[in-house]
Image 1 (cartoon, one colour):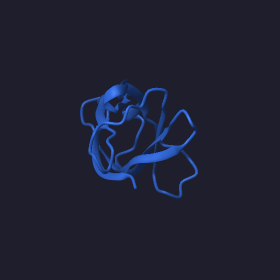
Image 2 (cartoon, one colour):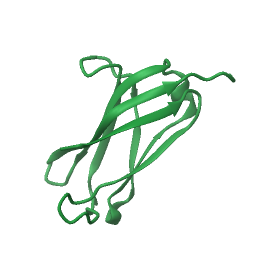
Image 3 (cartoon, one colour):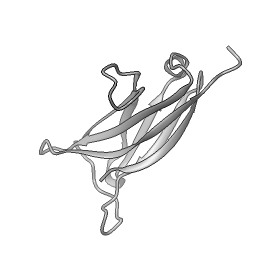
Image 4 (cartoon, helix red, strand yellow):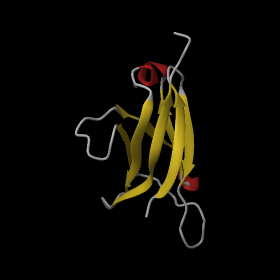
Length: 112
């Protein structure tokens, strides 16, 4: 089961978040060499339109580290409010796993 978090992104700012994938039993990092990671933001679970694709990169594969980023231009395009997201991994055996899910609240910018 995916971990659940509530994230906040300031509209018009660069978003950066690091997550670590660990074994549920041993709590040790999982080596994610060769994995593919995807992450999408949608207005609701039932939205057919993607609000944004968060760039997910493998930043430290031996320690199970994934970096999520969204640049300021893309956060500017998101309307303030609540969204849902998830992060999925696909390993070298094509096993797909949702590792993180939750809500993202976009807080409105003042300075433009």
